[in-house]
Image 1 (cartoon, protein in one colour):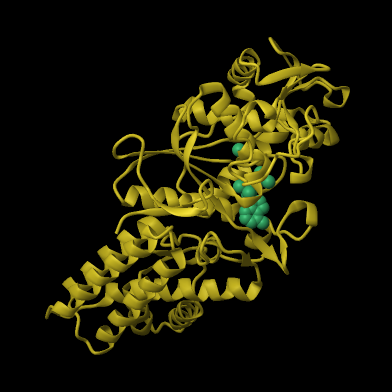
Image 2 (image 1 turned 30 degrees about the horizontal axis):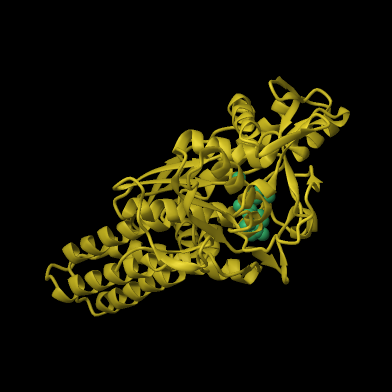
Length: 465
Ligand code: AMP
Ligand code: ZN
């Protein structure tokens, strides 16, 4: 089957073809670094990550770009409130973002361009739009003239026929009802304090939308394959990116627009402004495993809303534990007689896994297929109808699946209760000088992939992976 994605532009599933043979150029709108990201934001980045990983699994060479918005209304307000420089303020959240994506086992993008390092490029794009008559100046700011772009509204599928000519909006975020000419460059205002650039289009700072048009085209070219983000970015952000980019280049900007649905809390989008959010840190401090959070966020199809609950998170943790137990048990298989059934189970699982992901990245189905394989192989393990070599093949297949799922990173994983009890039992045996029992437990643990080390501070453990 061929790879297909639901394209927001056309509102249907389309076969995926790349512009350059074998290569995918892809962009995801990155974080605005004014605070710690919440797990709703990470739903968007984990979706981007699974897409990135699956394209690589399919053999594409992927160039993945994610911007960092380090100047906008929110970052300026935050730095002023704390009385520190914008750079010092945003650095804190940038560092937190990179630490968070590492905990979530998100594969890094190739480039993370920062807005403040691309002001010259943005000004050049604004000047091109001015020269083409698609933009105009008003009281020190520069606005995009949406009446100059006849297909304005094609992404969000809105009718702009009743639009009032000349209406303007300066804020970066606004509602559909407020559709109007939007700011490309914001003239300096005293509330921005020291944050401004003296440029050919005046003293001021860029609007949010021009940041993404500039940085995506700089690193991926005028016309690239995939652009992603949450559904809340369809309008106005992505609609405006298209208008700016296509007006400037005269070419199609992006072939495939993919948008993830929201993470919800009791029927409402998880958002800073609603106060109904958890940052990744909140949850890690409560003792949750970041990979269980990753699992939870990918276990629902990206185009479906997902309601966040702690029960859901617990279920994700249990599913993950089943996955780890399975891998641990495979490592213990010692049988010598190969069973041809195992090859058949692997072959079918691979085929089904790929078919699921080819179909608009159906991650819940792909996970279901992995668990079907686990069930089938567990049955053979119970019956001792599997060889060590078979188990090695299953592990290899599991690792292949995991190159897409990214769930096997388990350094941070807390020991399960059974293992904890065994370690305690061994400590007791050592204290009672029952070294035979102590050694036997050590061996059993080793077979489970847990290596013990006795140190003056007590017994330490690490996982063999
Ligand atoms: P922001 O920093 O607000 O621009 O958001 C960063 C990314 O997270 C964007 O792609 C948003 O669409 C996405 N996002 C924000 N809130 C949620 C949510 N509750 N669920 C899923 N994605 C979200
Ligand atoms: Zn963007």
